[in-house]
Length: 116
Image 1 (cartoon, rainbow, N blue to C red):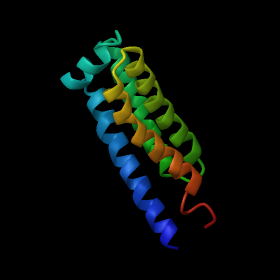
Image 2 (image 1 turned 60 degrees about the vertical axis):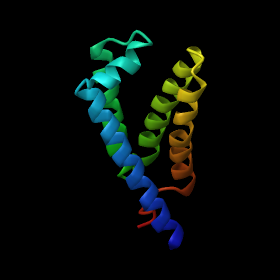
Image 3 (image 1 turned 135 degrees about the vertical axis):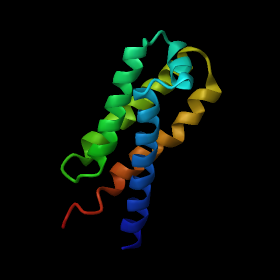
């Protein structure tokens, strides 16, 4: 029971962060455009990435789409990590690792409402 509560909290944190960062990308906030601009992403590409991030966050909430949402979210985080490493930005890449681990832990613990 306690594990389900912890997992629910982790899911809510992941969804909140995904919605927050997805919205920042979708609305083309200057800091997101600057970060993705280092990798030659256009404004439209950043906005599409934001929409996918928001979609992934919402998919995490439902048991039937839980794994797909986490997969999309983890793929986006892994993409950013790899792009950071391409620029030899070890600090930037290391910042993304806990978020990737969060999604992997959530997948391992499974959706708390899966068997209901």
